Image (tube, one colour):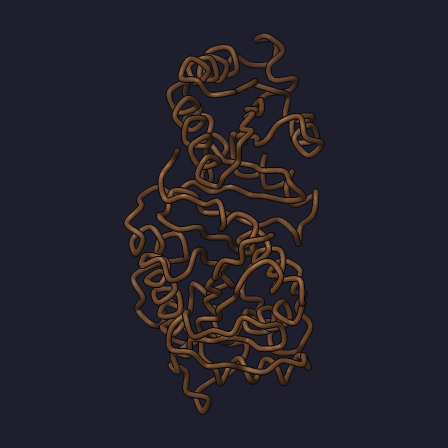
Length: 336
C-alpha cells in the first residue's frame, strides 16, 4: 500500500499561473491516492482560481498540517491571508505578490524542517516581483539554500523515468569546459550517487556524457575526455561509484531513457536540458538535491501573459506533485 506523505505546495506568485495549475492539478483524484497535498497560500486567491478554472472543489482552511482532511474534492490550505484583493492585479509585477510568494515558501520550509510535511512541490515565482518587494533572493534555489541551511544544492531533472544531473549550469560553454576537471567529475559523481541514495534509489548506474563528437574518439576530436573526463570517471569508480563513460552524448540519453543507466551526468546546461525537454517538455521536473527535505519543481515561469485566463496547462504541476509523492516515502535527510 502506498504511504501518503504530506506534500506542501507553496502557491507561488499569485498574479501568475501558479494558483490555476495548483487547483487544476488537485482536481485529479490520482493525486490523493499518492499523497496528502497541502497548499500554503492565500485562500482568497485559491477561491478565485477555482472560479476561473471551473473545477469542482471546496476549500478547507487549516492552521497546521495535522488538521487537513486530505480527501479528494477538498483543497486543504494553510491560509497566510497576506494578499489584499483590492490591490491584486493578475498578470502584473507586484511587491505584494513577491512578498507573499516568499512567505509561502518560508512557511513551507519551516514545516519541512520540523517534519510536519515531507516534501515541497513548488509553483513558479517571479524574480521582478521579489525584487519589487526587496526580498533578498533572486529565486527559489537561493531561498532554499539559505532557509534550509544547505549551500550548493544539486539539481536533477527527471522525465519519463530518465534522470539527468549537471556538472555545470549557468556558464558559457567556454567557461563550462574549463570546469570539466577530473576532480570535479569525481566529486559530482559522488554527489549524484549520494543524492540518489537519499531519494531511495537502489540501483545507481551513472553515465557521464561526452563533450566532443563520439566522446572525443580517443583524442581524435578533442582531448577533454582523455585528459579530464575519463580520469574523473576512473577516480569515482575507485571510490565505489558505479560509473561509466564518457558515453557519446548523441546516444547516452536515449540509453538512459530505455533503462541502461539510472542517471546521466550532463557536462553543461543545454546538453541535459535539450535531452530532457525534447523527451517531454511539460513533464520535465526539477528536483533540488542536498536540502534537508525533498523539493520538486515545475521548470517553467509565472507566464503572466496567459495568467488567469484558464489557458495554462497543469501537466507540469501535476507531474511535479506526483514525483514528490513518489520519492517522499523513501526520502532520507542524510545519505545511507
